[in-house]
Amino acid sequence: MAHESRLTGELRALLQTQRVAALGTLCEDGAPLVSMVPFAIEPGSACLVIHVSGLAAHTRNLQASPAVSLLILRAEVQGEPVHALPRVTLQGRAAVLSRDSTAWHACRAAYLARFAEAEPMTQLGDFMFVALHVSAARQVAGFGAARSLDPNELAQVLRGAAKSGGSAVAD
Figure 1 (tube, rainbow, N blue to C red):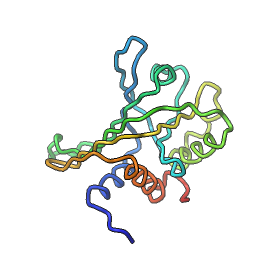
Figure 2 (figure 1 turned 60 degrees about the vertical axis):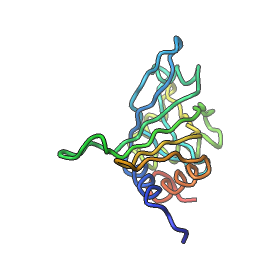
Figure 3 (figure 1 turned 120 degrees about the horizontal axis):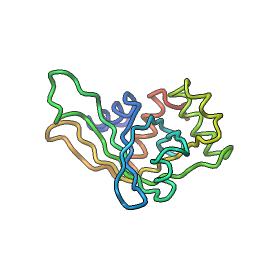
Figure 4 (figure 1 turned 90 degrees about the vertical axis):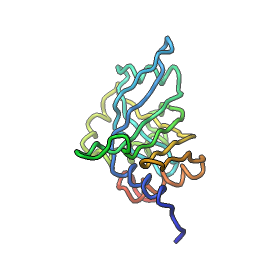
């Protein structure tokens, strides 16, 4: 088994244990908008998956301008400094998936593996699956422990988090 750095292990654990992210999109006028979204990881394409309503402002925004950012962070713990909260900021592009495409089925399976209770919402006509193809990441694991990840390492971490985190079927 290959050696995994402490930071890589902490990032994988963060992605496995946190189920929501702050999604940043751009409004038509260029103003930023941040929304909360549940996410899963699809290991085959190493993308994050969200399931969103066409009525939501963030959905309209990412359809018009697919550049997105996500912030995933560990929940605050009483008595611990908030400035040291483990977190990762991801940057990438959103792609709305065509219903019943191969990618749609893979992303739906990954999402429902993590959020089984959302199954009835997948039948609603205004909801869609969106694949977030991340190309950059900045991890902060605490004071003095920060790094940027290259796309290859990021893909490996996402695949590993999906396989061992229960958010998708292992490949």
